[in-house]
Length: 197
View 1 (tube, rainbow, N blue to C red):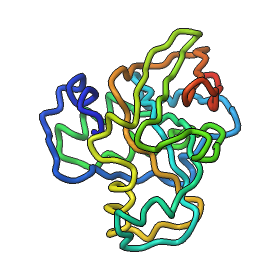
View 2: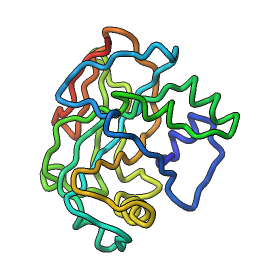
View 3: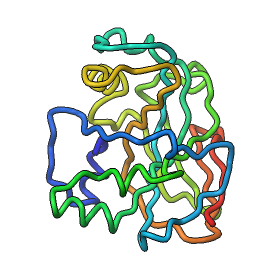
């Protein structure tokens, strides 16, 4: 819920004054180009392409003006969502974890130094599926920029070295199917490349 155009496509009337945070476990991670296997408990697994920052030191109650000192690498990742399950849980007012934090639901690409990507407030990124661009965004469109997200999250959770923060998805989310080939880019640099099985 960190891009207005995504909120619009999801018919989400929520306008929060604070970032919306949820957690994924370490078993959610999928990296090194390994395939993503569609789980048998969902009939509508959807991709959400996001910029991911890697925390590089321990931090708690980080002031927003100092948040930039707590990361120096970024990549593009996929937050897979079991949309059918999420919709049911939302209607019932229940937590989302089983729809968002299931095994291998957090795909990460190869990390690059932030200096290579440029200004964190103006990072372009996109996703191709089977050679077709299906989603694109720019961190300039975030409702809550990276440093504000870090400052906010660190009020509640001690951030540790190696923690990953997914920063939200723009419009264009959609379902995946077996044999889809996903490729994620920051600018012209491909950092994410894997298949759905």
